[in-house]
Length: 233
Image 1: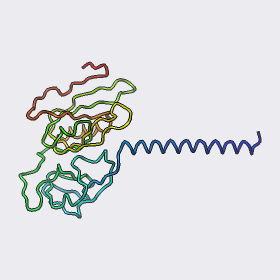
Image 2: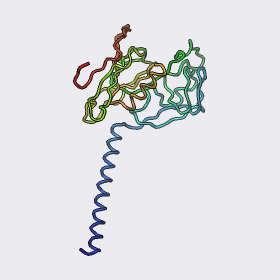
Image 3: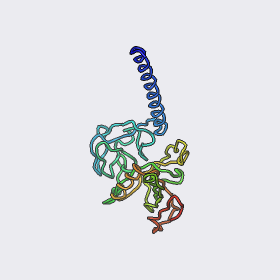
Image 4: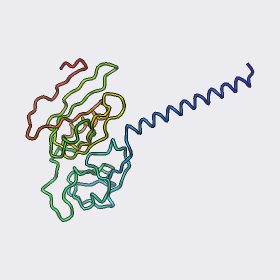
């Protein structure tokens, strides 16, 4: 085979492989866009806000984020927060949500919404949005990803957690076990340790699920129950 013919064949092969790679990237990008949902507007703090501060427009900005990751109770316009009183510290760049805002102009508040040592944990989880409402209580289930191809495990991680804000989330997409599962975006009243745990669970677990409790049901003691792939505790 002549050098010229070999060069033409190699060029053709390179073009074909490049086309396949580009098509694969396009498919992956489209799949990612479907999972994340459309971009929505979220209000964030331009500068830190301390408990008791009145919110001014120049201390806010907006950010476009995928709908799947928009915070529960998140605001879409700075005007919704202007004049409200901050009830929990909001770092610069953090989302501004209804769970950390109190009385409007001319109103007084009965005190901070959070007690000492408490935090607001925002998460998107599987769960019935119509039954998970502000003021309600939930239990938190964590399903871990299988380690090294082994079986996964579902654990009752937290019990009787207060819901500060909640809104419907996008149903699970795709063809896996989570396809079509109702989802909810929720803000929960938790301790610092629990907030760190929930952040890690969202990042590394297969699924986080919220189980609504009946009003007045404050029974505890089941936390730590775990079930493996063999459905045995």
